Image 1 (tube, helix red, strand yellow):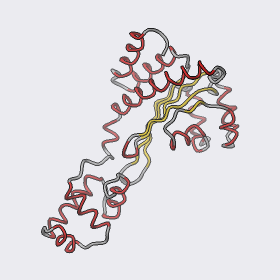
Image 2: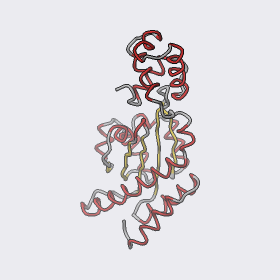
Image 3: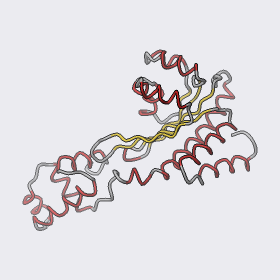
Amino acid sequence: MGGSLSEGIDLMSSIISAQSEADLLAAVSSAASRCGFERVLVGTQWVSARGDRCFQVLSGYPIDWQTKYAQRGYMAMDPTVSYCQNHTQSLVWNQAQFRQANAMELYEEARAVGLGCGMSVPIHEAAGVKTMVSFVRDQPIDQDLRETAQLVKAGEILGNVAHFTFRRLITPQIQGVLPKQLTQSEIEALRWVAHGKTGWEISQIMNIAESTVVFHVKNAMSKLNVINRPQAIAAAFRLGLLE
């Protein structure tokens, strides 16, 4: 990041100390501006225990563009979004990416509103939590290799700090669908359910009463926020509990 070390620390502190989404957007936008970017977007995705994708987006893009982007379903064709879903390395945007994705209409319209040049920083956490932080300006950032390297480094620092701050701010919403920690007995009972064992068979294997098996399975279902055993097994597999 440009400026002195103390200035960089101050910028990071302003982001980390944000107490609301509005404060966070203002802090990240200010820090990004110091690095040469004009607009920022922070989007976090997580998967509920039932397998539903949930999204929360903090956008500094023009409101008219946000509306058009949503109405035309551009997210489904946006190559920066699909890239960040599947990669953890930062992405510097270029026209070829949009051409290969048959998304030149999106590219040209984004350029028309000053959003044609930028980079995206993907951050992947456990339990399906992923964040895409994009920094945008109207001038290319890949014309000079040294400048590009500096911008990418700054963007990655800002992106990661923004991610963890945003994650903290929306944790209550995510916690509503992320499971509480399962006990070893609950995990073992679910594992045997996944193997097709009956309650009685599981009781013999675990050397506990059948009613206790039912108790463990019901507790696991409650913690996973599901309503039946198949959903519990699917949720546990997604979370890596039955591997």
